[in-house]
Length: 137
Image (cartoon, rainbow, N blue to C red; front, side, top):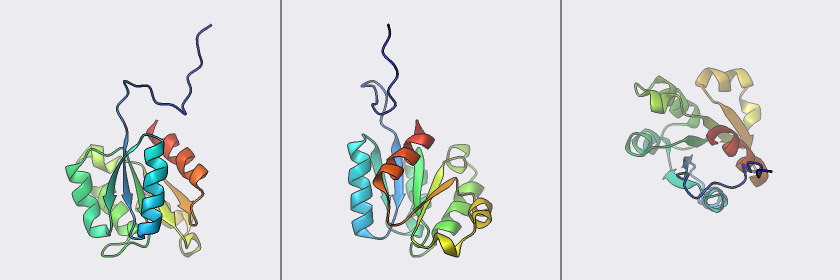
């Protein structure tokens, strides 16, 4: 009998997936980074909306965790720019919005901006891992 595929583990020969975390809170950023690194993801950081496109254009990324309330350009504006990008590898990326005030946005506004999914703050780290794995496996 062959062993069942376990999505909880990555095989030794599969390359690590890269997640861009766009978050200005160093506490949330560091916790999120640690949780995802424990799951064997590679992490790229953007501390504000001005860094998001630079990071995406300079690093191969598999998924974006986007704080909606980041400085310079908010997460909704950044997501619209990602969706409008000429490079299909960038404009098709899953964008997971992270926000402490999801009530300020309707699902229609998230969809209009191109958000793939969203997680409320305070972050549930089990949900974080589950949602990221759903879009990058």
